[in-house]
Every structure is written in structure tokens, then in C-alpha cells.
Image (cartoon, rainbow, N blue to C red):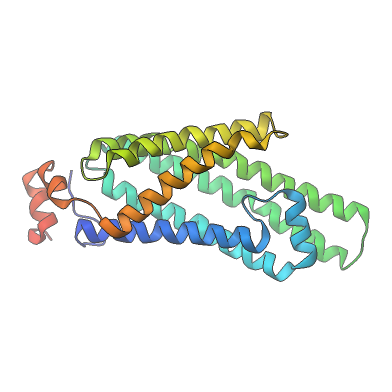
Length: 245
């Protein structure tokens, strides 16, 4: 498996680019939540944001869209880094991530519908328009929760490949697998036990450690190029060291 990446840069540099993309994804997602409760907020919280600060909510929606794009680009970067370990599993986690991002983007149409309902009301307190808005926001919430099935599933092959890679810490691989379990717990809790949100709280800490840990490691440490090269075919080592194209 060739180590040459599409940007034709050193593997350590490419790892840091991937880490930067991951960090940008996290930051934009946090900003989207801060501006309009998009992502982790309830339907009522988002409705209140639309009513009190529609401009901030629209800006939050823009950040949410960018976060989806950045997450897909991050998955692609991880695919490029980890495909020498196992191409099929790397492709699997990339596809799972892509499906999750697609569902997330589709669910954001519910946010657009809620904004349109707010514009149509034009300051009115008509009950039917308020109910329509809440319904649209609940549609978004359901779509966002559904994405956790895929965003949880992609962490299992990703964590396994990190464990097997030898150029990333095995602890991060184990944490990513636990993060996958946490995401699936969130998915099941939201759909089956919505009255008990505390069930997902322990998993949130695991997710923070796993994903922020991987982000910072890639951004600061990169990857251990010598171990990457030691596991690769000779022509791949030449390419990674600058002897390729």
C-alpha cells in the first residue's frame, strides 16, 4: 500500500493537516451550538434562539454546515493515513462517516423549515406556526440523533486501525472504540429513553478524551514516520522519504 498521499506532502505533515481539520470541525460544531443550540440543544432551546436571536441562529446554521464538511474531510484524512494498515476497514469507516454526514446535512433542512416558519409568522404569535416550527426542529433533532448510529459505528474500524497502526498510540485506539460504544448508547437513549438524558453523560467524557486526544496528537505529534515506513513496501518507503513522485 503506497504511502504517497494526494497532497504529496510528508506523512507527518499530512497527519498534522488532518489534526487541524479535526480541530476545525470541533470548533465549528461548538460555535454552532453556542450561537443557536444547533447540535446538542433541544427543540425548545432552538425555537427560543430563533425567536430571540434569529441572526445568530442563521450564523450557527452556517457553522453547522461547515462542521459537517470539515468532519468529512477529517475522515478522508484519517482514511489516507490508515489505509496502509487495512484498506478495506479504512474505506469502511470513511463510508460510515460519509453516510452520517449526509443524514446530518439532510436533517438540517428541518432547521431551514423552522426559519421559514418563523419568517412566515412575521412577529405573529399564531399557535399553529409555533407548533409547525417545533415540529420542524424535532425532525432535525431526530435526524441528528440518527447520525450517531453511523458516527458511532465508524469509530470501531477507526479505533481498531489506530490500535494496529503502530504509528499512533494504542490508548487512543482503545478510547475510540469506547467512544463508539458511547455514541451508540446516546443513539439508543435518545430514541428509546428520551426522558433519561443522564444515561449518555458518562459517554460524553469518553468522547471528549478520545476525539480531542486524537485531534491534538495528530496536530502536535503527527505520526511516527519510521514505524510507518518499517511496515510498508520498499517502494512506499521511498515515496514517503521523498524518493517518489
